Image (cartoon, rainbow, N blue to C red):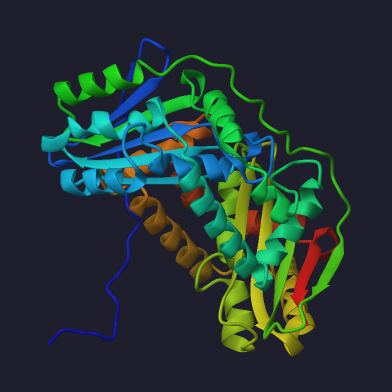
Length: 422
């Protein structure tokens, strides 16, 4: 009979061997990274462009431009273009980080010629007034709904706290920000952002020479340009603050404890990720055990890292019952003190180590996942060595390292506290 009580023994996986992509340079200087996988008939192509919010000269312009691209085929309406993609079996999506936009196209290799038609949206986009107005109305409707949510309002206050009102992306939006954007703004932002100097292309699947030649031919037509200047996020260090905003009808209070932390390229970022996971970034973390399992203050709490150009922010965030707000904040500070004063046991260290090993391996499991991880590395100026360094750090970090990091980064007086609710 199978033993369903005792778990099987766990073991640490050996360092995986990562095959770097083939890199080709197009005639206009755009790099093309090919992750060959002959067993994958669905080809995944991602165009990474420096067109995120830290480049926008006015609030929400990057979001408007990037999201409206999908509906901006030069010769087809949004409805006709969607019908064309459905018939060809092509999936098209866009998402954006603080610094980059990612246009993703998934298409069957047998219909690769249809890719020429799809990619007209970044070769010759046509921003139509009716699509702009539809997107504007939807954005305003979503914004009105979101501003009634404590966590959304808390995130706005945190950006303002750390970056001030000088930068468009940290400015708290109002109706005028959505209403003033017009086609001229979109065309100007697209022209300056979607140029050869700003683009990188990533592709995986059964990439035949014919597919490679077609992709190179299409993107070699991307013009050169004068990219917009990135808005600097480093506007000095502001003293920690306690901010509260009343939301009378809130059933719960949103809490956030935040401070600066190592940047994406800081030599200590890998050790900090381990330490932050143990503290508050997985289901068995110290914060989850205290605030959820022990005290029942919240359903969930997390400590996350947000990387911006020039700086990064660590944020502990949750939503708690209105009458438990101060108790929950104090519980967070209590867990900080415990990590500063008490060494972490071997069993807990190994549990976090195994969790992070598994997460890291999932991030490179197959050519699609590897490509998407590589995109993130490439955007901060790294390659597969980033993964190797992280994997080695997970294996080498000790309880003493965690305690040292706690004494460096988990001091109550260094945290700003933002609460939104009753």
